Length: 343
Image 1 (cartoon, rainbow, N blue to C red):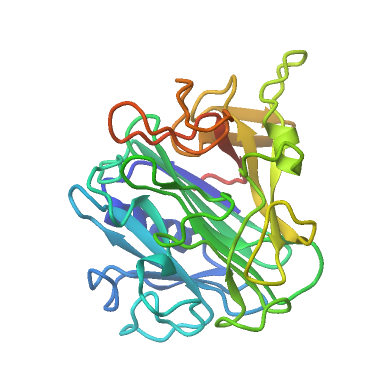
Image 2: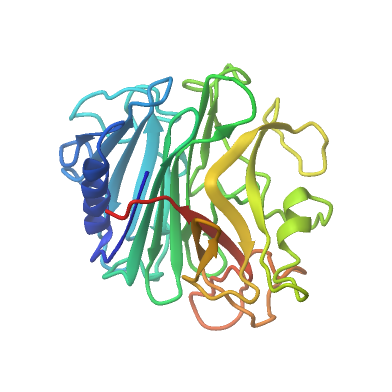
């Protein structure tokens, strides 16, 4: 269980920093390759394995250092390594080997962006949070592109609410032009550009094996009765100056038509050491100490209080007014628990 903070110069350098971090952490993590064919561009694929998981758990990443429009890191889970010649989306047990834009998670500028969202580099700083669940490990990556603009990437195994095969998750945040933004934890994200995967073999028989596009029960707007809404949308409590943390729940749906108003959700678990938090009264990059725990607080993308959101909530999607790139996340934020040592 480890933590690292540093500076990365580009998407490729960030992937190298992740490789160095995982190598230093060591078992039960294993770096399968840090450079090899099969990437896009070739020669830049990083594949890591969580050997502590009960089932094969691999994550492959490739960076894109495009100078302006689509600098990003793309990431895909799989269940076995198919060798150095396999593309990162085509290893054994990959949820979608089609290689289309929607088949993998994207961190950074969107695949169709024409404006740099601060991910080309050099980045202001990065944060790597690594830890354990009862069923495996996790790695959470936060990058501050330009000052005050953040990107997130998650991979790991959830804290399970019960016993089942799987529990692996992947998610990332990207920003397109205008109001196209995907956030980890967003309900029904725009999967034409980046997919958030969840593996639950016992619940689903289709997929390879049992992967589903995840609809996290978080950040959904329009239903004040939802569990996260009532906890974190209150923001900073005036009477005690405390900021509530809300768990990021991982439910599943028994078919392919999930609905936020249905009662047919089944709880699979929650994301470990990561919480929803209101940025109300909080500063980007702030740390909070709770007992022996240190939590780092970041906006989902960019904190804004301009009041011109096109929706009714201060925690809603992005605004579409003002100068480009127009991407903000208002008061929505994440809190990550730092689990030492710092390496």
